[in-house]
Amino acid sequence: MKKIKSILAIAMISTLVVGTLAGCGTKAPTKTTSSVDSSKPVSLAFWEQDDPTAQKTLDKLIADFHVANPTITVKRTHYETEDLRKNFSTASLGTTGPDVVLSPNDNLGVFVPGSLVQPIDTIVGEDFMKTLDEKTLEAGKFTGKQYMIPDRNGNEVLISYNKKLVTTAPKTFEELEAMGLKLKKEGKVDYGLVFNEVEPFFSIGFLGAFGGKVFDDVNATSPKPTLNTPAVTQWMTFMKKIHSEGLIAKESDATVADNLFKGGKAAFIINGPWGFADYKKAGIDLGIMAIPTINGKSPAPYSAVKGYTVSAGVKDANKLAAVKKFLMFVNSKDAQLKMVDAHQQYPTNLEAMKDAKITGNPLIVGQKDQLSKATPMPNITQMRAIWDAIKPVQQDVLSGKTKPEDAGAIMQKKAIEGIKALGL
Image 1: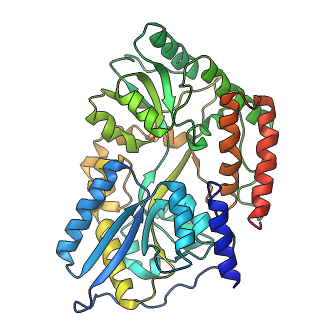
Image 2 (image 1 turned 60 degrees about the horizontal axis):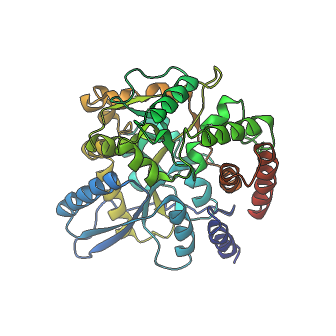
């Protein structure tokens, strides 16, 4: 009953945008079979939160996997980030949930306390784990246990720019601002800079430039939110300024921002490497750079890994064997290199990391500067309450409903209430 109540609470909080609840863990299976019984067809439900280009690559990999394993059928279903969390939490109450999930590692703050996933290293085995980068595997752990196999490292946002409009990359944000406004005044672009203004993931890096952070100590037993600070006021004042002066769009989600940049109507975009393939396909002469300094200080966007988790509901030995085969296939050197074409991030397979396709790719090597300035995404459960608190207030600041100087106090109140609602 306690577990059911925990999952119900997660689903309820998720409907408010993001969801989670601390609860008990799930004991990992102690033994799995290494082969699939060919007389028993197996169907795997695979949920993912990935971009359109990556989805196409996944479909090709799934088709290849089926050819090699004709008794195993993998059905892929796509969800956006928040819908995936909410639906996984809800579906776990019945039998309609996924067997395997591909999503960012901060989801572990929801999946593990909600008893939605199980340790994954015991499924694929120690030998296979040794084929993956140890540092990225650490990002797939929660409370010291390996719940995720990361298939890419980075997931950070950075600046992409159109070289036809920007011949020399700006060294500071003040230079970027001046360039963008000049191009707009000359009628060459609609906006100097675009990004997803709905999700704070794309703007929270600016908070670091003002010396702010969202928790007092992310490693503490009970980390406290730190949103009612001068740094948050400066961040929101900055956001309001670039919005009011017309550097960024009046309203913009991810689709609007992408379309403006791909259409040559914006000089710069803050987005992740997952957008590179679409930008190049649209004919953009693409340059990339770290988000430049503001008043001499570097923004610190979050970095993360994305990877595979296995539902706690997968207990049948034959299905576990099928899951193992699938995970080993999609995280092989060749499969990860194919996925790199779509997401343009570092792979985690050790042999793939050494491949010339990686070391000779300027769009991947060029991410090192931004990654060196990024902050690892907290995968603690309380982070869900932080996003819940920031998102509506940021939108109210941009729309003029809330003053920048009032934003921090409102965010802090919402964050404290959200953490309390999570039972933490």
